[in-house]
Length: 108
Image (cartoon, rainbow, N blue to C red; front, side, top):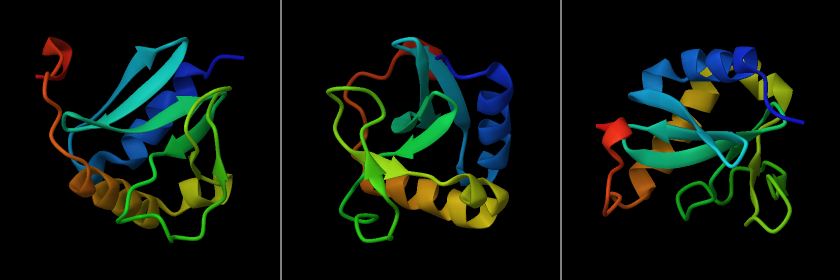
């Protein structure tokens, strides 16, 4: 089941305070970028935030966004109702990721 555009737009709007947010189609779902860094995936209308050293111990359940993927933080629906905490999580995640080597033109 693919994510709805409404869900994707809602999550991007919630995270506007974290930086320049973009959701790009990826493998039939969406990759969520903060500035030029891939910080999360939206799969089946569920937000999965990358696990980094800076956010490893935040207490969220971990799950793979799709079969064969590395585990990510599974963001519960109630956290979508607390945009400040979610924005902080995305900001911390983006800050702890290295700059991408080759930035796709659509992110510039």
